[in-house]
Length: 283
Image 1 (tube, rainbow, N blue to C red):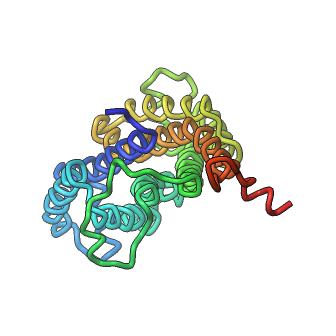
Image 2 (cartoon, rainbow, N blue to C red):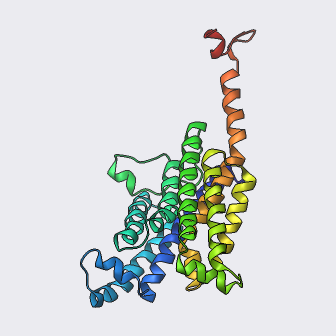
Image 3 (cartoon, one colour):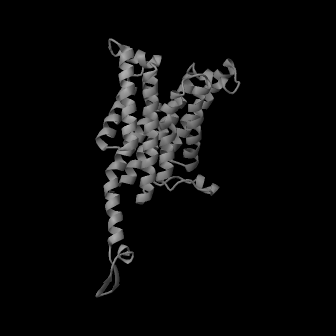
């Protein structure tokens, strides 16, 4: 069976969305201490938060596994809401707002998959149907998908660059552990480069730049100071949106060519006569 651009984009975003659920759920089971701050936003005390963490973590992992094997629209919709709310808990608990912005991939990946699959529906029953990996999209849908991915990538790179510029301690520790002599200066330089990359993706994305940023995000997340593997998994939305945009940019010329062909293709009236295309009627 031939793999289409839509297949590649679908599975990239689907796996990325599932990674967000599974990685986040793992932190719940591990009872990551900083989570108690986020429960505190809702007035939940320290002891109760530690009892709730593994429960919520288990639910997250189950949802992630369902998404991998049976991608219901309802799960994707919930992941968008979950991604926004959990990311907002960071600044609401006293962390820099850049922590929210940097996690745009968490809700950007499922949103992009919804757009690829025909968008949202007012039909409640439609929410409980799976998205189709073999869907065929038109140039207009592809354009909307591209804008969504560009926006998510812009935000996540801007947010991470922001955290580098303010010298977030865990990032400085990461650069120190990698042997950089002046980790604070390294953070400043990386922050500027990431913000430039964010603007490039937003204004004029190029496949070579997107691929370089994809490799950078994967590599940098692997060296996180704590919970390296699980941090890598939870940030699947960051890599997934970049890789999906790379596939979109690869497919875009073919979509434009097909669209232009359909506009100029002659319409047969009978065996020996052709009419001009629609554009000629407007001249």
